[in-house]
Length: 250
Ligand code: BTN
Image (cartoon, rainbow, N blue to C red):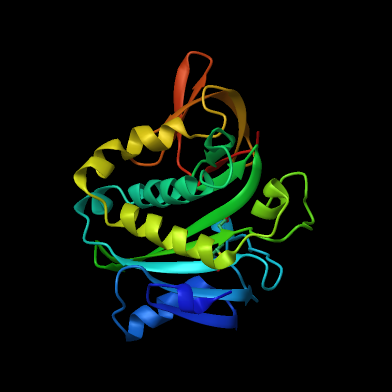
């Protein structure tokens, strides 16, 4: 990677436990600019959603955490807007590499190409009382890795494009797009719900969800509301699920 090409403030670490954890620790000691980025070639304890881990071959992919001051009033009432904004930023970048019709957002914020996961986002907020002071957006994006344990459900840019991709360029793009979305103007905010919903994986399709008590729910995915609840039409009822209590399985 040619780090001299990066036009934003960053810390590069050859190895770290987790870039999100590192960024959160940094926030307790310093006051970084919006868009400040911590990225690494390898994480020993990469974290995912639902307490999952995030595995990535050393030096192949992008493991990055970006910090934003969250003055946005909307996020206080609806912290899920941060998931939508960051998902849309990554969706836009992926759409420059492959046909954007193939890129979908799996609720709450996985990025898929033709149904295979290529990126995951872990958002961690730093609160003062009720207020979100900072948001750490952690993104794992598979760039040049070609061997995966679960190769049926995971992909990378190299697998999709059959060529090596310059990680510095992708990082630069992600930073630019994420900063545009995370410091949104009112037009972006007004459109975010419909924009995000239109990119949903399995939108208007019959799907299955697994609840945290292992119960399976079947129905048609209709939308994700302002609060991040997934609305499913099941029989003649619309059911709403919080992302901590249910996951899409197909
Ligand atoms: C998920 O799909 O569950 C979210 C995965 C998020 C992984 C990224 S990699 C960079 C950042 N640091 C972490 O420990 N996790 C996020």
